[in-house]
Image (cartoon, rainbow, N blue to C red; front, side):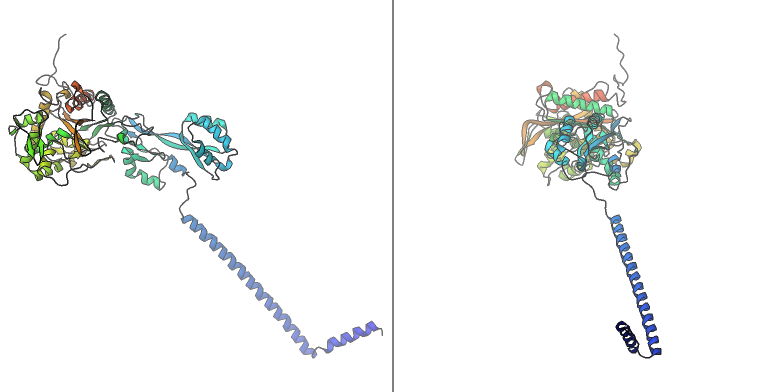
Length: 584
């Protein structure tokens, strides 16, 4: 037997001899095989479970993040806004006759996507060829930034858009927007107010419109490009234009630093016209926030001078402390508490109530207030709405000022218009109550019917007081010595009261620097409209005099001559009111 055969034989024997007895050996091999299969199956199930759990956790994380993103507020990228907000409409604003005062026009704004701009220097050079007023440094910084969006210029003209399109600059685009347009320019600027660059109201009736819910809707994205119902105002554009013309002319004639006026419906409280000058063009509101562009009629407070004598006399008549026949001693000045009260045009004699009004006697007015008493005086002015803030739609309304403590000297000086500062609109409102039947009606810039006005009107003076005040107003214009004679307009039965108040400069009244006003109504037989005009610090006037009778008074006459026919007031001539026939 060969060596290799012997070795194989030995190995074979050794294999079988190392194993226990046959039956036992076979059983153990089968057990070991079955155990291996079981372990392998268990491991496979564990692995599938782990994989399933892993996928479940991953999907839960992804789902949770999606919910988190859905609940989070949207982020604003650069200065861009959602297109719905950019295109959200504002309602047109109309005058009482349907003339458009403010409307939206479509425009576009220029933007850049810096990541797509190839050469910022070249892009800047081409853009400034169309828009030369672009600020080079800031524009270059935007064009070369790493952001994805930058505004370059808001609200372009169609011509500017077409010229920039023709340049074909990569990364430059246009976004549609809306711009507020005011066809009348500055004519009614202080009433309408203005909007900001995002077409949101920030002053005047534009701000009032937003305060009625438009701004809240825009904030939550519930506005769209749909046409909104127009807002109609009580303003008559024709009367507004005439009033502003007279103010501009008066400023030039009398060299004042400011002027203003209001035309008020005496029975409804509707503001038919309100103007303050200097004003601004809301289409180009560069100077809208300048201090001299203040709405002096409703947002400025002034000592209204002798116009307050109308309220002082009405107070005495209403309380019954005097009648039109009562007399007051004006023969010499009054001395009280170290102060001297004297008359500007002293008559140095005893005056009736009518003469106190016509001659505008400070002494007589002070004695009337003294006869009524401090508490009753303050209560009457409060009743007339002269000591509290007006309630009206225009946001720019100032609160009046008065002494913290009313002393006897305060009551006496307030009687002739020094010591209490009110807004001119407030004075016109109170003046209307003296002639319209005795009803105080808060002014409104929205249409209001006579019936609606009657529901909110408050009776503040007696019918007999109204009758007497109408007579006094009319006498002051028709009598030769009346301070209001230059306001007379033939056929329109004008009445009124002047007010010349020396201005306070650093706490002292300065002679020659006046705030002049004229409070008037027409026709005095049945007053329909109240007109108040004032001019601040005029340097000259008619007959080279800068008092109210020669500045504000003739301005009122010019206003009434122009607006009375527009308002439908029929002129009356002759003693019985019939037309006078003239032969040529």
